[in-house]
Image (tube, rainbow, N blue to C red; front, side, top):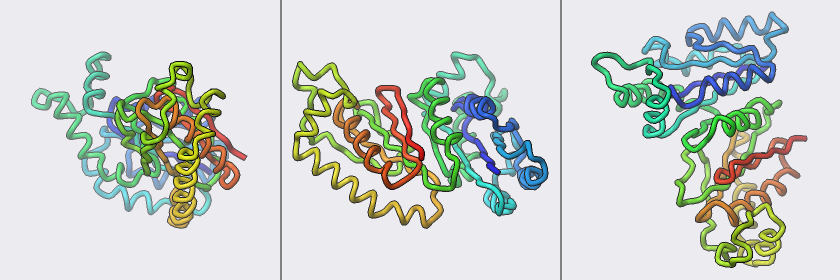
Length: 290
């Protein structure tokens, strides 16, 4: 049995995430009171149709509900199911823009609480469950389509307790992913951008693969990053870690970081059953599962 708890600040994409899981066969419940989670978990052991369940838990719960969320989750009868807590968030500027564009009412706004104050208040309110999340996703730079794709890859397609590894390329000039567990800076490597004949390609194109594949520095960087991850990943597995996001950054997120993320994904596919790659600046994701 699979139980996915989705939480996060309003406007971060919880509804979209829940709809994706519903489309993929999960029994979904929106805004379940935290106190009812143990009862739901026990019910899933009885009803066969509840083999895959996803629930959203948000600020519409009573304020004190999150004070003991740690105890509630650890009271669940977990012998027969896999529990994943997924937390979605976005920058406050983007959350403000999303509410302004849709003209939706934030659940914590009132005559005395502005939208900006409500967004910050919600962050503090949800902090206990945010700290317990197995997977945190920053949706600041994601379209709805990208979020749906990522939820499918990282959550719905995770069919075992094996750790799910994501290699994510990005460009430093667009900001560091706040949901990364490790960030590696590869801006010191030879840059295909400065060759006009290569500038229009990406790290997935053969022209860039050939260029970077022949650079000793690039190979040494790949070996060092791989060695570090191989050395420490088993410790995270032993600590029951379910997800790991390794971000690889170059200047624009088009060439070097894309190439190395693809190479590392291909390498780690031989050792782990759930390995994925996402190129933030290219808006694309792919996965490998045995």
